[in-house]
Length: 555
Image (tube, rainbow, N blue to C red):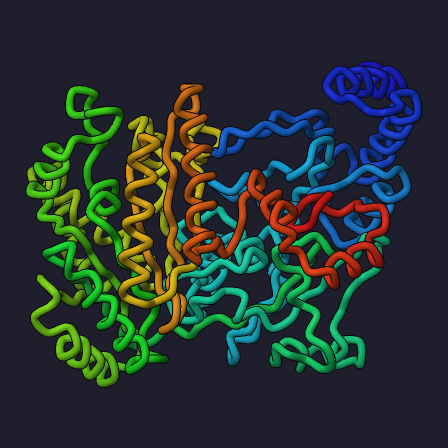
């Protein structure tokens, strides 16, 4: 085994081969000393010059990935970074599919991967408040709740079971179950600043950590939000309110027979949300293309025209699956009497405008799925496939982690991993960029938005897959997956051009993303969108710009 000095000389040689620093001699020594210090601190839990992948087909030079296991480790890692002026970029688990995965915004960073910090610190079974570290995943939380028979819902997302709870909340993500706005359910957090100091709220510092985890707004200026969608600190733990498991869950599905009826349905959805607030989760509105991407394999080349599924093929697929231009799904939560009353109200509000309005409970679908899975001639035909998809969807509505949305990333290539193998879209070279704009819940604006997306996607030979998810009775968030083949250079260029045009055109029309991927952060600088106050705060607490340079702030 080579000595440490030889080992770090080899490391330095690798790094300098891949990075171009202004003063190589000084930086060579700094990198060598910093890597030695990190390796000693973390007991060699460090990857040098890692080959990190992402779905967005962007490459970044990364010096190393560090895997701290405690708050003390993070504090020391940050102090070393600050001493040697080497920037660090933090990820919870790094499974930020379609937004950059583990890659940093800027070149030549150290990645601080917190996946080994996966402790459930505390849980109050009476209030449902849980305090966790960033590495805790949806699956881990589900296992914990099941083991101890705690009747609470997991704040699930379509990103899958192996994604971080804290990471999604920091990105201000959302789901479809109660407490759908995941940052809204964050009650308190702790974070490490660029100088290695620990941020805690006033209530916590006054000695009352208990009440701090029960009241979101604390005392004095609200500062917790500064640690979301930004680069002002590294969140090390978070207290989250979990929604209690209701005695009754009932999902509903309905279709819009004619594309022109979408505006009337938007008005109905807005009324449903207003009148059933507290009983209703989010409502998803999906176009025909999006539903077919969940139920049908991508067609062969002979069914494509100009690189897209032909109209004839779409019509044939839709007729086979009985998929109308728009499909809407949602769920009701509460006791049986409340849910049944809400069901009647939905029927009344939708009236003749909705086609095939049906309601299911998870238990009913689970029983049907058990029957189809045990009957071979049904299991492998269209009925069996449909029931399986419905069963996975119902798991998500019931607050159970599911991979139901992950196969989307594999749709173009049809190379989904074998059943039982975890899906890793970035490692499996799936091409996916998310465009996630906010859309006013105004009928005419929804039409304007969907028309814009469809025309721009088709222009760039991208299948127009549209989902609108209700944030409130005022706005939707739309998630547009830009799917492409990463091994095709022309397809990569078209995908990025599609995102660029969607962003720029959407900006002119008033549709702007609620979050950005690593390749689009520069838009904020381009349009001078960053408040001066935020720049002043960053300069004051991170003068060396050590923490995640370029993330929602210019370099």
